[in-house]
Image 1 (cartoon, one colour):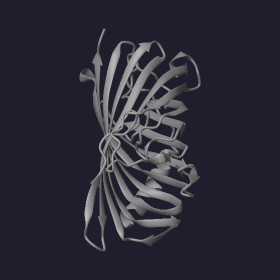
Image 2 (image 1 turned 45 degrees about the vertical axis):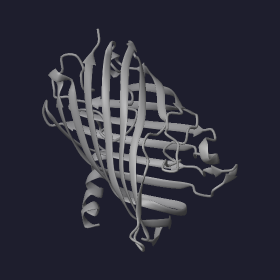
Image 3 (image 1 turned 30 degrees about the vertical axis):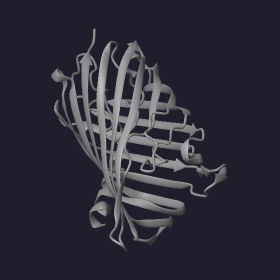
Image 4 (image 1 turned 45 degrees about the horizontal axis):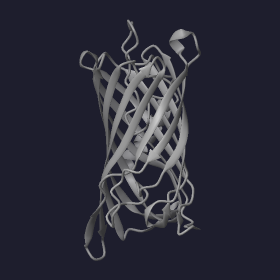
Length: 304
């Protein structure tokens, strides 16, 4: 993939650049960048304004480029085309404390290349609910913004023979996160690390514990447009079926460039990112995505 090879060094260089003032600060003297575009709880170390409601939609389109084991492709017999949306809500409760939810809605088209047969899987996954508490604020003299999350995953999925257990199978989950944001002028760097584990749900399946690291750099070209790059690394432990390990742990690292448009008077912002695989490793035969296109739409409403 020649295009992704050109993108990789550019993305790495971008991710090493330090980042800027959080968007929405009082009386900005320089343009302010938007936060991460890819699907993450966000916005890392910063908080959400008191009395305001944020409605967000993350959409991801991706296609697999074969079945892989270890670090190599072993077959191209199955192709998956994924359309995944995550509907999110955020509300500022008090200064430095907000609550947020995330509910996935997904459609996966699975095609057998040998027979030409295909089927659609999916619908609604399980919902995550988290409290986000800001501990340090750069605007008040701290070296950076620092926040922590405490969250639950609650059963909201429509379990059937068409649902994908890995996305949601009516199980409970619990976890937490830490996020930092560093700002300097029109640059902004966000870093989040999430850890979640799950109970056994429907189909006698227990989703694997996972650790996700999301890094985002943004540079505000002006008051309306940003450029930057983002990176996401996922470590997944083995899942269980009927109480037995499935020996299917995996690690994935995707990164690539992004752009964003924001219109502060209307409380609206949109981000677009193209993500490509930097490193992939799979314990079992696993369909793997050759690219990811990520879109984020955000609208803030004042409820006070």
